[in-house]
Amino acid sequence: MRPSTALLTDHYELTMLQAALGSGTAHRRSVFELYPRRLPDGRRYGVVAGVGRALDSIEDFRFDDDVLDALVGIVDEPTREWLSSYHFSGDVWGYPEGEMYFPWSPLAIVEGSFAEAVLLETLLLSIYNHDSAIASAASRMTTVAGDRPCIEMGSRRTHEEAAVAAARAAYVAGFATTSNLAARRRYSVPSAGTSAHSFTLVHDTEAEAFRAQVTSLGSGTTLLVDTYDIREAVALGVEIAGPDLGAVRIDSGDLGVLAREVRAQLDQLGATGTKIIVTSDLDEFAIAALASAPVDGYGVGTQLVIGSGHPTCGFVYKLVAREGDDGELVSVAKRSTDKISIGGRKFALRRRSAQGVAEAEVIGVGVPPADDGDDRALLVPLVRDGEIVGRETLDEARARHQTARAELPRPAQQMSRGEPVIPTVHV
Image (tube, rainbow, N blue to C red; front, side):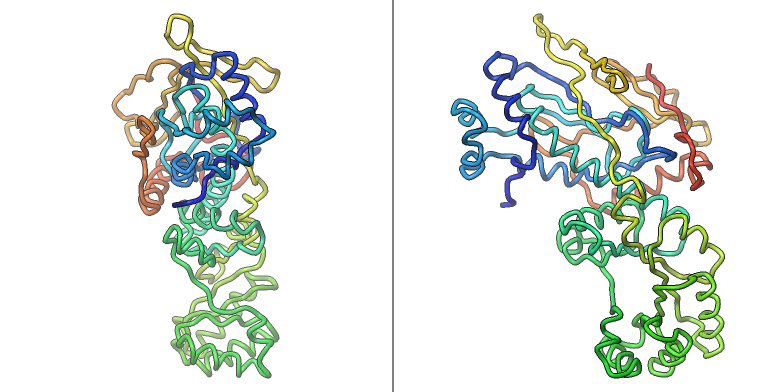
């Protein structure tokens, strides 16, 4: 059994629950919505990620004895008694993993009693905000990389658990592999890696290091060639591994210039099939700048795990409808300056042209928007009556992302700052 996720929350979620139990409003049927008011500044689209992790976390949101013990002094005994039998029994609809999102997209709609649904706020926001930020950055990187693979290698640049989630999210958005073995074990994300500079430095000579690596891993391995002199290292690598050397990695310097020099040297040495992998603080702009260079793959670390400047998406989780005195749902909305919400249960579709190109994010309030025949519904059932129904494989999410990105208008491929590539329309 996985550990409980119930304490991955804010103190005020539990004090709200206690007060609602006291006022009699805890059991009112309610609808919460997780959504963005806007995209991160300058971004043209966002990518939904973390859905599978969120479903696991809802399933594991329970109050075991040790969790209840931790709440002594935070909530009273009647509240702890109520929590002891907590199990989310409502419904969740949402955008599936890998899908695109835009301002006001209802990414997750949580329906249940106020008490059941409000407790999920912090946990869902934590997962969606982090994973979608990583996937959104990763999508921009894989867009400009084209057919050249991107390798996720940011574990050492973030929290150890964030690293696992980041590797998962990057894979959804098109990254080929990760360096993180926990992501391989938990989520079956393919992993890859060979050696670092320390491996070369621990040997008496670079030749000894290369020979040891080739002996252990075979001639198809990737040799790190910038510890000392790149030109000498490339020549040494081909001499030791032969013309079938798998790849060389360059981790410093002017990567475009160096890649051209190394490619010419490799070809001259007969290693025409040896690939060139580049690393060193890459982001989507650096990858785009290397488009004309003879580079075969990119290793991305820091900029990926910090969302390439946007480490969160700004998602919020708001009550948009609740049960009224007559038993029917009534819309509720927040009117605070700059932090408004739009009341009512939402429905969403992607309006598309007859050619299948996305034209608008259409949000129906209270009723589903009309489909003109070329449109695509966006919300799918994730939880029904408390049971998880929306699980899928990462490869399914990955394929969805490729399809959804391909239907966006061409300006979505531009890395320059811009407005959302399609408008959001409420009907």
